[in-house]
Image (cartoon, rainbow, N blue to C red):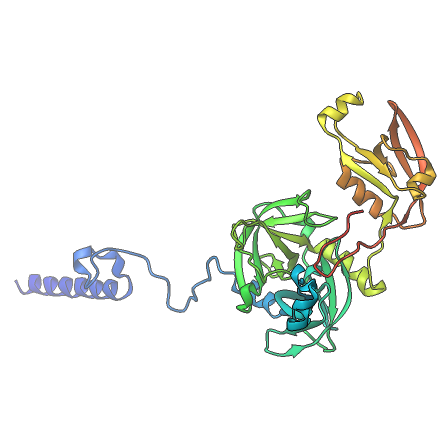
Length: 389
């Protein structure tokens, strides 16, 4: 009997020891009723593991925000005089008060593109402005000078006399895809630096009637008045576009915004910094797209090409023998799909260079050599309107 009791005591001691060890080191192996406190089993991360940020773009925002500035401009505009003020009697009593100028102001954004103080913004922001002020992310202010602008792409370059500025990193806008997440950074309604998120909705948007040369990135990131000239960046904080315009019926964001690709902005910026402006090729013609009806009337198999509707007298095209009614099919062997592609192909040719143009005239292909001229600058009025060519 004593031997049996010793076996029982030893067995009980061993079992209690096993339960103690399991309870301490592996409580999940015990039945639910044996565990204290918890009514359901779940997995917990170890306390020394730092939780990862999920779906956060804070790093990209911090990287780009310091390079985005607020741009405020002002200019004097003449107040239209009422016709009654031409009456000598009324002018005797009221004088020329209605002939006085008043100052208007506008707010926008810009992007620091070089530590040497170069800033990219929209041409319509600084065009005809007589006072410009730049407010940096760190609170500093500066009065820049306009290095040059290009109304036909709506881009301008400013320069401030400051060194070691936080410049943005240019991304590869040509590698962007529809559906990519993007961030728009700017100064909407003068609130200061604001970040909104969206995706790229479309690429290569043109025929919008906004600029002469159009190749917009469309995005649904919220872009409001004041965002003009701000940055459109990818999720790494790299610049892929300069915000330029929105489509709206209310004045606010409706999910359709347009940005100038960074690749275009870089080319224009480099020319402006080097020469103070942008030089493009020009031949002096007025062209229109080929419609289905026009193609049928000219007995063409498709609508490719651009119909020459007018030729400027003594211009490069006129001197080479181009006539109204000709259909431009190719420039330097590159096919012309419509009037916009024609414009881009000709603009890319250096002025003074002879170039091969393939025309369709009376259902016969004609090869012409045209010495390309320099594209005239558009005439911009104080109200921001441009003369048509």
